[in-house]
Amino acid sequence: MSKLRILAEFWEFLRYRKKYWLAPIIIMLLLLSALIILSEGSALAPFVYTLF
Image (cartoon, rainbow, N blue to C red; front, side):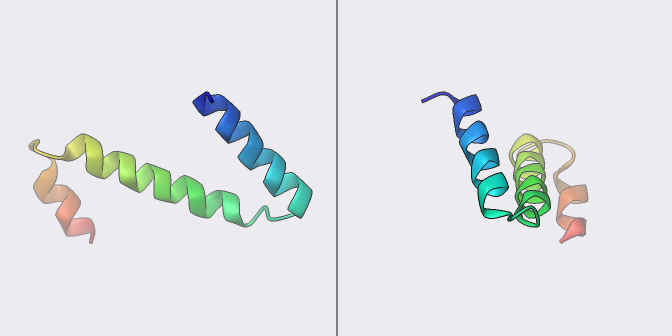
């Protein structure tokens, strides 16, 4: 199953169940996890730790 298909199914779930309030939460979690993964072991690590 492709990654785009998973996103399409998730969007369909949100539309069908009228759970639009979940979308910003999921987006923020994905952005934070991408920030942590990308900055791991780099010079940005001390700045990421100050956010938390």
